[in-house]
Length: 68
View 1 (cartoon, rainbow, N blue to C red):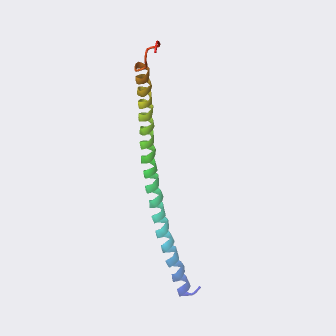
View 2: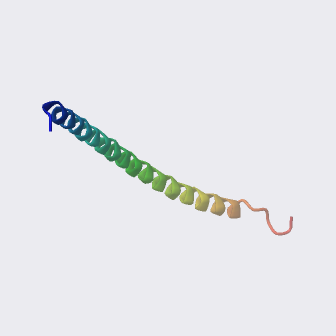
View 3: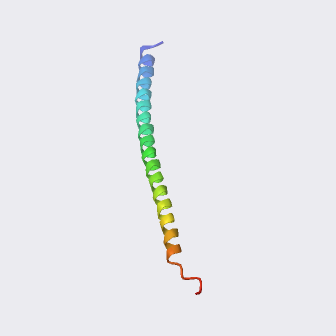
């Protein structure tokens, strides 16, 4: 194996290792953001259920009497 070929392989390996580290960070950051978005979504669903229940109870109280 020639010296130039060995250097070329080592260079490619170094670039691949750098790329893998970069991609790992991107995936890690995306997972963190996904976790944050899931948490926010759960809070919104809880709030929507609460507001829906409050709206339903308010409609019953504000309903006109049966003789209307």
